[in-house]
Structures are given as structure tokens and as C-alpha cells.
Length: 260
Image 1 (cartoon, rainbow, N blue to C red):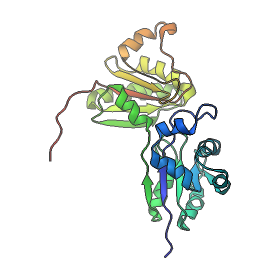
Image 2 (cartoon, helix red, strand yellow):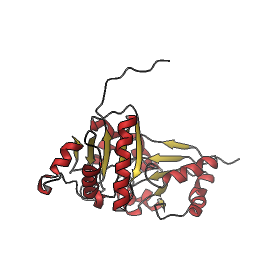
Image 3 (cartoon, rainbow, N blue to C red):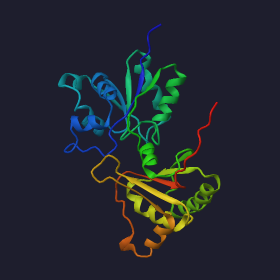
Image 4 (cartoon, helix red, strand yellow):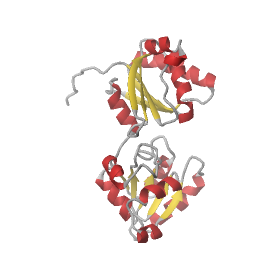
């Protein structure tokens, strides 16, 4: 029986990739050496964006390696029927890597479906350590990180989003579980205002924006404070069109560890 290839889940820099700003040295400060080595050695990558992947990989491959490079795109517009063809090179023994636009793949992006089918086909899946915007936001929030839930994207429709926040807030107070969610960058500021107007006063909200980038901003405020600021739009915080993670919950507490 022929050896099947391995599927590596590769981290990438969190901040939006900019060919003028990123260098091999700056990427290496954020991404572990094991991932950099695989950037250089692998020839087959399944990517969310071909343009971003080429910019990133070109920092770690020579001209010969770039000529041998093969990229396959699997993004939010991909169809499930395409998965078989994407995994065929691994069935034939070639190692490959999944690269998302930012951070760890398969969380809040379509790569998870590829991994599911890789497991079903007996392909070994190897996650490689790297930056996660969700975990970094949670750790920097000062909110309770003993139990947490990632909600992905909230509804895009204004009324449905407001209804979701009015439901999520009281649930968070009842069960004490911190919630994390994200938004398309151009709707960040609208979501922030909705949070101020729809969440309970005694909840805390953290916004972690452009983590690892030049416009990084991480702050935590009580919703009651944000609601007061919302009365004067000029004093209300602005996030801008950068990747952001929203975290709501209670303050972190010292809790005894469970023992077995």
C-alpha cells in the first residue's frame, strides 16, 4: 500500500498581509520555526487566498521551490464536491498544508470541512502551533477564561443581530460562560454600537482589533460605560476596518483547580 501524505494545518501572521510591511524576519517573530520550515519544504498548499499565500511563501522559498509550488484554492465560495480533488495529491503520497488568511486554519473558515474528509480518508492531520486571534483576545480581555464559547459571526441583518445580542447577553449572565464572536471588518463599528445598546449594563465587553498589526487596540469596558459614551458619537470608540474579536463576560476570578 502506498504511503499517504500528511495534511499540515499551518498558522500564518494574524495581521493583514502587506507586501510592503511584512518581511521574513517579521513573520518569523509571530510564526513558530516549525511552520516556517514547512513553508519552505512543502510543495502543495490548499489556501484561502492565492494572492496572500504567494506573498507569504515567497519569503521562504527560492526561485526553484516557487516554480515547483502548487496551490489549490478552497474558500467560502468552494463547493463540497471539490474536496475529493483537493485531497487526491495526499492520497498519492504528497504532503500538503492548509493556509488560511490569518492565524490558525479551520476555525471560522471553511478548512474544517477539508480536515473532516481527510480523517474519513485515513489521511494523517497534523496541527502546527501558531497565533490564534481568539485565544489571544480571550487572554488579553481580563474576562473569565475558565469556560468560554465561540459564536462565530452574528447575523448580518440589523434586526436579527440586535435580537441575537439581546438573547446572548442574559444567557451569558445566567451561565457565567464568556462568549466570543467576530464580524466582517466593515461592520465592526456598527456591531460595537449594537453591543452598547443591546447588551445588559453589567456585562463587560472586550474588543481586540488588528492583533499583531500596526493598529492593534485591545480594551475592556463595562457595557454601562459604553452606553453612556454612545450618547455622544464623537466620544464613542471606533474600531475601523480591521480584523477584530469581540468578547463578553464577567471579570476573571481565582478558582480552585479540579483534582482527580
